Length: 291
Image (cartoon, rainbow, N blue to C red; front, side, top):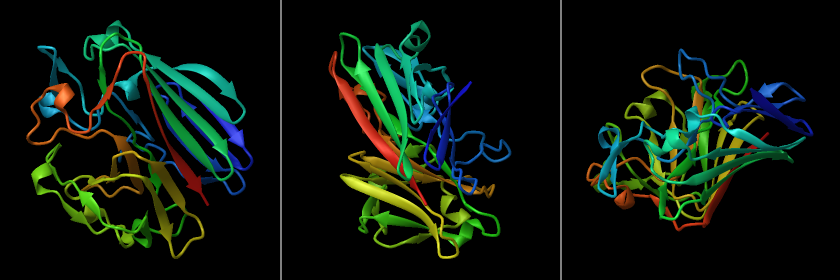
């Protein structure tokens, strides 16, 4: 089942499975901004990453003396959310801990995800509540994929990625599925980055971020663009498939990150992990602006 929300010339569709954004369309010209999940390339649109981001070493972590297994990016993207509230331009979804989740993630939680249309874009909010009596350790992030090119007649290479603020950011290289933190460098994000498929030969481009950031996919050959913005999400990833050349680019704002090569396996020691006391609430959000 999907939920449809509208505001002005924008329409968004969100699936109850994974509370995943499946479509963001400008109805004035039928321009679709979200990747439509062709399984020959990548069969998802914009999965929610929770309670981990990226991969754990051997898909395993330890907590309070026990070992647990979680797949890459966690389980929320594959679970059925409940629609808590629905208005014309707004939808709120909920995923709660259960016997099923506790077998692999022994925490009590409530994960709320909301989508709200307005102006020229969509605001996506995450709210994590610790409904248990112990510290809650988690990561959460987005994985929206945008059509590139955005219109017919153009190619992936006709587009570039624009960074704001235009400054260098710490780049975290991947070695296999894990972050090689000792080899981090300054990435040249102080200028526009022309898109090529080869830039993803070593998987995603990952950067540390702090404060207010926005990233735009643009072309000199088109008036249409898409921008993703957020405040105080500590990491961002950019990804597309390789060597398969796919017509999309993911811009992924994260509160968390894959295991480093040096990771101990203890969940509480994981780089970028969020720690939430009992009954406390964690909130973050990002926005997608279209043109």
